[in-house]
Length: 538
Image (tube, rainbow, N blue to C red):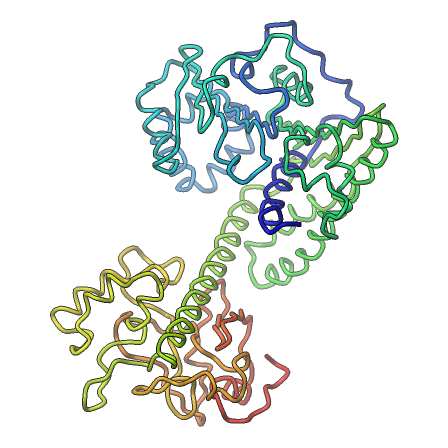
């Protein structure tokens, strides 16, 4: 498989399987096929959706926003939902309360550029400001995006992004295609969400027989004609999935593939649950999340499958009554935020480590821990020296390297701290960083001279480069962690990302530590050529 195709494959999988996992629930099993509405009577917001679109999603925004479930979440996290309303008002020129539905479609997704060509149909409850909508929507997209606003009705807006004028005309009243059942299901107005994919317009590599092992079990779905899902929100969260194939034998294979997909989900949930339970033992706020998590796992395990002619079916039901949804939601948001912060911090460290290596490639050595004056007094941090290698060369040129970090010129540059030095969750305007290095007594860095990679005889994968320190310092200040093998260096390292410590090794890799290793192992990891054996506790 070509590199370009391999990179695009996950996007195709996301769009395809996302239609099947849009929620956790189902319509009642054995529901009859959706009856087609009378010709020409599709709601106007659905008249523009190609019946062979690669991907289609219709959301009843009014039902979602006014549902008891959303109300529960809004009360539990008022600030986030207030911000969401403000963002919607800015982007759409109207409040969420004025939205009835949003319909999204991608005509095809064969190649990566196709992801930049789509249509959005928005139905409002009342007349909307066309200029505000067009300007707000344009603000969400790249500046060079081609946008056209079509106004089919006073309360309906069709926004075409990268598509030609042909998509601004309604589809023929008698249009038929792989997505026709999904579009008709959306037209009934009975479902909170409806999503579907015409598989023939997804990447060609999905049809190949040499798919990667982790997705090969889903191949019968990829080779089907279409897949669509409906989601309903009420006393339970209900999902119904249908896979349309050409022959009954293919439908039976697709049923097995749906079962394999749900099995994958239950296995992932099963692996995640013990970690959440362990955290919940120390954090009472997570206990309600555990209850909801277990309910979701039970719902997934109770999924029902079937074959009806040339269609494979899947249904799952998650009862909502009695679940502590509000507190579980808050705990989940906090946990996801912490996990996101840990990922962002890890990415920061990777960028810093890469910059260190690029600096080494150019200067034949890593940077010293500081820019020092003629007497060896530290003036500016190594973080200033690697600025050109984190795409901040213009900022680097503003520094006077022969002056200390708090000189009149250099001190005013504190406010320009690059994002790569900011720990996620830092307050706006912060000028301090937790990313610091160990210095002296055999550590990877010395104050005056930069070390060569060949001098790290303990191995680059066994030697600390940069750590998340307990205490933050002004990012330009040459204040690092003095290594003293007689003292406990663990006190200098902080559990600052999701309650964990993170370190970048001299080989450029990043490690996340739930707990620090012993003093002996820690000292061995700090030194670059001590010849120590790294203990099993790392």
